[in-house]
Length: 495
Image 1 (cartoon, one colour):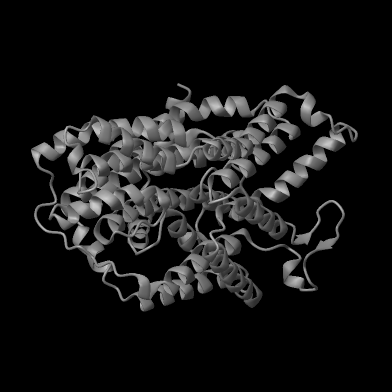
Image 2: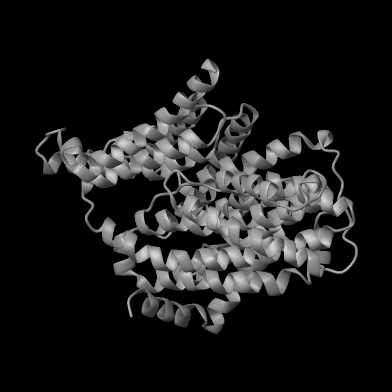
């Protein structure tokens, strides 16, 4: 049976009444928060992390699957009706979708985004089901040097791909590494960067860092630009169903977007931005109506939205099989795993298959729930967009503070949260990417442990990191991911 049998067992876990309820709640909450202006999937998941504190791990991650896809759907709604993309991957959706809404076809834009998300998410999850066991077999051959190389690859790819420059990316990376060093050194027992505060001896909770930098920092940034935001909600009119011509123009872009999004999202250097822009460019070339692009072409919504959601499924491949986050949202999901003392990878597939395959099965269920639930509820999401912005952002800050306090019932955690929130605001102000800091904070302590263990096993021989072929290959990939963007810039300047 193999992966197919494991998936059937996963459906047995995910289809229990209790877990179906958590999946439905996750889809609803994810969409409700994701539809709010300027809030993308990463911020949605970070903001709702505290909601799952008291749940069993399987129920929590099934709920997270719903939050993940629900946040992506909510982001497309905001992009289309308010012209406010919550992340860079939704820029194209905002460009064409908002123009469709202004022409009175906002309902069709929302429909093609929802159905495209369902098609791409389902096909992407099938790909995850088939590829995950293969990746796990590869990961079983990893030793300490290989795991260190993988973490370095994660550092280099997410630093090189996110943000406007390598310098800003590495600044965020080193900030995250410093945050990860706070607490007691496990090997020497020495306190590091605690500043004499007893509550910091156990380190800064990864949830506090994620919510502070992402949720609080981003909320402060959006609120600071409130008076500069002149966009208004475009009303939805007419039937929510697409016309026959719109169906004909959408189904091929859905499939082409999926074919671009999933493979690129599965790569360590993947992400959602590249496939969405590639999909838009491809659809513009293949369209029988190229003159409509920039004025509300439905292909410009269908293809990129499918690519975005397929890449979201692809991102889960390196995350679940190698513990390698390749996007901001994946970094937040890794925080959730860490919160339960779990490390994604080959060992998790062996030690807790019910959790892994229940999570994968819930992706199919959550996708279906999104399609059935959200098209009839378009009116509700539009009304959410009418909430006064000051009340909305004040509520987010209060919710973040209450959720963080419940971690350890400590006011120190709340103070650290808002300090990190202010830091996140400054990072956003100067275009310093937040994701590398969160990834470095999570993976930095693990990199230190793998580095020390590798040296212990080799009796202090540093050549162990380059004499093992797999580790050397991964280190070379990490170097290429840093050097390649620099080389491209040099070539462009020379031309």
